[in-house]
Every structure is written in C-alpha cells, then in structure tokens.
Length: 104
Image (cartoon, rainbow, N blue to C red):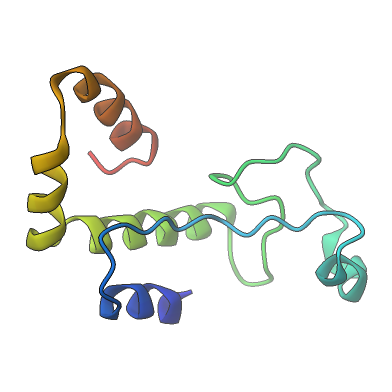
C-alpha cells in the first residue's frame, strides 16, 4: 500500500483516488483465497474494506487510505491547482467529500 502511495506522489498527476480494493465472490483473488474470506461482508463500499488482510484491522486500512489522500492532495502544487478550479456552487460538495474521507 505504501508503495502505491509513493508511486502516485512521484507521478506527474493532478488527481488520484485511492480506493480500497474490493474482492468480489467468484473473482480470481476470491477463488485463490476462499479460506481467508470467511468473514466476507456482502455490503460493498470502496471506503470500507470488504476483506481485512491478516494482521490488519478495518481501521488500519481506512487510515492508510486517508494518509494517501492527505499526502497526495495537501501538496502545494496540487492544492493551488484545485483551488483555481473551484466554483462557489461546488464549495458545499467539496466540504462534504473532505469530511467523508476525514481529510478535515
């Protein structure tokens, strides 16, 4: 996960989104690791893990996602470019998204 964050920071990107991997019953990853997924949650969300790897908690995964978003978007160049594009009608939506991902 940390390698993915570092890679995104090195790339000349203006935007990135760090979703939590979703393992869907029947996919190749599911088939290879069925025994690990006994506590699979049917509810799907890219903000909440459906599968928690051994040695980690759901909270650990969400904190890593938040860290990735902060590290990427709170860089001066990215912040400046994003602020330039904001329209007044978008402010409420932006604040809601920042709160949802616990960035503020």
